[in-house]
Image (cartoon, rainbow, N blue to C red; front, side):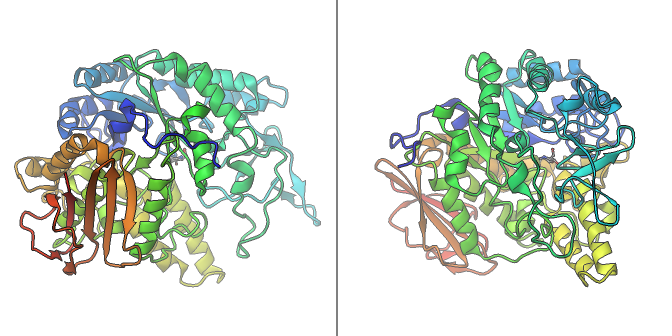
Length: 584
Ligand code: NOJ
């Protein structure tokens, strides 16, 4: 029996019932016309966020950074990227959120720093520098012909290797992401203590209410760094997550972080601070439970990514070589991550967008003009009826969609998109994978991280009202049609629907937030139907994932709580319609 089996009902805690709203600072609201969003811009929109009915703001990194990876490459944890504002601005933001009854969590990015961080500059300065071991340095290997080779054959996230040669001390350093993002060495206790002080206590002392913990399961690696088996014959670099993910000391490190730092702080209203970890490459429920079991005192909850990996193969070399999927596959994923916490002391999260993915309307339903609003509403139903803590991404509440397909590759600014594109061009040109560029372009049009980073569409003025200057990323061509101002005036808008659903989620939280999940008709490729139960109450959620009418699930004896259409047709689910029935 699993060590995490507990009572039939989940213990109630504030963050389980809360809805989180993610803000990507570069693209939310620009206050000074430099084309980049900023903290004062965000402050001016706190009333808007509060009006949605969400409870917590998660702010993606706003720390000082060379922005190679949009702030996930931090050069100083204790200052704010100047174009975004100052530490005082963030202090104002904390106050403003709290005054509106919202909590604020920051992004904790401590698997790696930027190569411009003082710690790394010192580390790379000499082999005997006291901070040398705060990062991973290894000597070169040499092949039979005497050519210098990296210490291992690992593939990084951004379509290159994980080791970069440093001329100064003539060794390689490790980076799971871009070469400008060297990995911190958590084996070193001084390094861990510095992380706790600089990246965590500094901000907790300013009154933030918790952290989203970036790439949390990669702090512990197999530091003997064995070579990875060759599974990709086109390449020297190979997927090697088994050597740098969920390593031998990971649970010790996460427990220490919780015990030494997080457990000493409370939220502005006196409750436990919250953590949500980014847990990639952990496919088994038992592996996830070890992080989120209340008993283990590690993280409150995590993001598990099977849902956003739909169509992405293993998420590594073929991430953007789109693999078509069918609805039963999605249902199995939802069922797996809805049910794994049942009768345990663990918890789950519900989301289908963030800053690392294409927009859900474009990926999971339809973004053509005829169906995009219905799609957005149906996906809203899909989200709000699921058990777990709900996370929404900025713009999702107005049904923002992917960049238009006729935009060229030059509009894709993300380091990951560029890496995969350049790799595809090389492989196409050298004949190792003819036709790859076309396939990768298609995958990027659907799934690139860039889509979620387009400026927020506030109104129909220039650039969607995001900036009075030139936006750092082009505003979506459809901002005159899809924007928050228009939708605020329309009772049938996606925005109005989200507000209503968030209200219903709270009102029916027993069933929606805490209920047990049961899949109905798993093999149906057109409709997605599930039940939620809590004690003697049942809800049925029925959704049509196609653009043609489908027979409605026979729940007619129940009460229709909500439909995404203003008029329902008995016995039929209209294209991209979602409905919730309840029997109490
Ligand atoms: C996960 C973040 O969500 C992503 O945007 C970033 O590139 C990597 N971690 C590296 O920090």
